[in-house]
Image 1 (cartoon, one colour):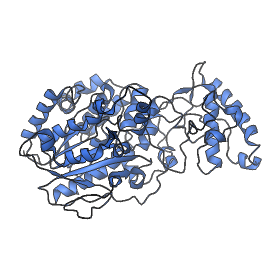
Image 2 (cartoon, rainbow, N blue to C red):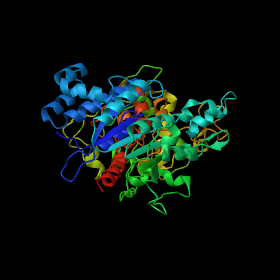
Image 3 (cartoon, rainbow, N blue to C red):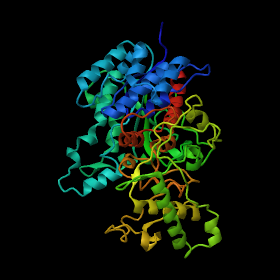
Image 4 (cartoon, one colour):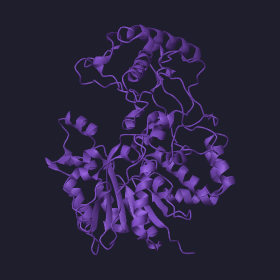
Length: 513
């Protein structure tokens, strides 16, 4: 039987955010438009997540099999038992993720051969998606490198990983490609020269860049700005390629460069993303229906009783500190009574609790048949940080969602930081405002929670993996493999799947024209 689906080759896939968005696109009759042929990822934990999700997609149309997937993520059966029960689907899932982590630039012989096989056996259209690792381009990475006298940008191979993307383009010769990266790529320099114009030049003509004869050229489109001449796009500003995700229904200020490459023989002109009618999508509306949890106590005995006693003392202390600035009636209206009997993790979803998530994200995120919450566990924090977390959350409630700077902290709460008063660590602690979209969820969330404080002062904690995943728009049934730190890294490095779905729909319309 002929397969008319559009083949997707997913490079530098991470946990699969781009692939999830594309694979969810459907025709008006409910048929899947894209089929992921291969997802390439080097990180072992992200690779396990990719494989688990690949199997989920292959079981999705079988209600009984889907129940077994739920049993696996609920811990009722092992992954081995799940894979053994569905050997055919499991074999396809493993084939999709190349059975093991693979690294572009190191395992090219194997990877390129697999892509050639896919392309040779596929009659329909092809799409390459993915984002080369961004550490060399990110502002944080460049700041670290600036302090290293031995660092030379021209010797950092990460600046040139996009050339691995070009090599795959030369093999697959797709009708369309989508390449994503951090906003820092627009200003990154090698030998004091901006690198982004060279990347655009190579993407427009990957044949010349890879010495591949008979290779078509590509037109590079912005997904948010219409070109003056759509048939021959040439944008005046590099920032035209920057997507501000919060404008497109994502509850997070994630600003990323995403390029849409269209092969020259494709005469149709792509649409641009449509701004969301729901602006902003707030943090509270997205995570408020998740089970309430307490933080952990690190570097000391951790019990619910001791935690409740500690938090009660903290809140009493905070009230006295805040009474110097705020009216007692205002403080009383915040309802800061300490919570009791809170767990540190919960898989028990209260299906009677009314969610505040609005469509279209409601249908996208929620799965009523899942009947549990995945990856929802708090980390431990030292006692003094719990006090600061609670202060930050209260401060935001009293100041229209604004997170406090170092100058706003009472002297009694100042950490033992030599630079605390200099302003260089002014936003060392940052609460995620309940009534606004979140700041960018980054992989740094895996190292500490100071930038990702929950807006509820009585929970005194940072965001869980599931809360971060919600803000990244991963569906609730998306299970992240690995330990908690690895899960945070995966979520922080991903492309928001709901944004990827909107991009996928643009590609679908373009190729169907």
